[in-house]
Length: 360
Image 1 (cartoon, rainbow, N blue to C red):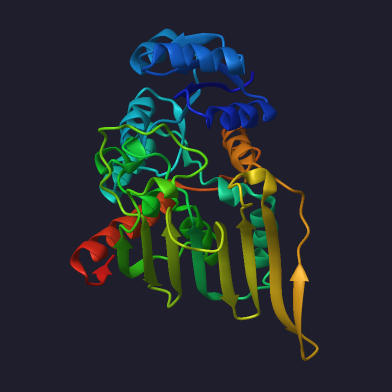
Image 2 (spheres, helix red, strand yellow):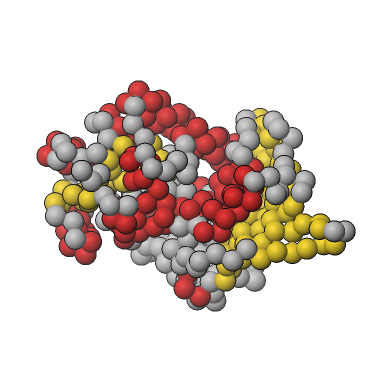
């Protein structure tokens, strides 16, 4: 019998989730959104038979559900995941995992109590470049990764003004929590070491300048709230002796949008990077996956060639979730890792607010 799954949220990410679930052989049986019209439109677009405007009603009306995927504003990630776990459903949730480490700890405990799988859409782990790099790391070709640099920097990428993205009560913050993918990917390459301290600064320059709006996001809300950062920079140390620097921004005067992790290992260095095109969309991006080593006394740069993936792993990540439920793949991420990541995010915001390093 195929895994039966429902999607909560009618936003654009539903297209990637639906494609990934179906590629793994799952059956999407329902879609729920508080906006009934949006739910009906998305369900028709993606060929989903049943529509609900209330998640509790859906869970009661569709008892055969095995799992749900959650695609809603950040504030509602943890409450909906808890609701689904308590109803005995497996959960695949968009990032960030929650608004705080405290919320994530509660999610982790609920998943363990329910004995259900809880995963998050850290889709950059599912990119072909990341899978390839992890093979080299697992084979020992890189050695120990001592340091890495995680970047998601945008020249003009504010996802709408006054909407939920720029309202801290709904989003949890700006690019630091929104674009945490590269921090996560760097941690993934490093073996997700336990964090020790973080020092960070946030900046609000240009956060209200309409010239810095991105090519995607949500419509502006004229009388909405904009109380989040435009950029965050920081440094994390780990109990293993490893370290990471990070730079994330929606609106900084960079050359072009860059999404990358660069690392330095004891045997080889490496890079996974996407440079977005001038129009800011995936289709015109340039991807790179490289290793840097010393061979026969010579410095060698190696290009790792992988299939192009315009979706940046979004489809493959959803496929992994279904295969985990079927027992045919290992999970690309775990609740323990999500909790560690949220401790770093919490600590970075606290450090920025106090001007001091924060022990984690």
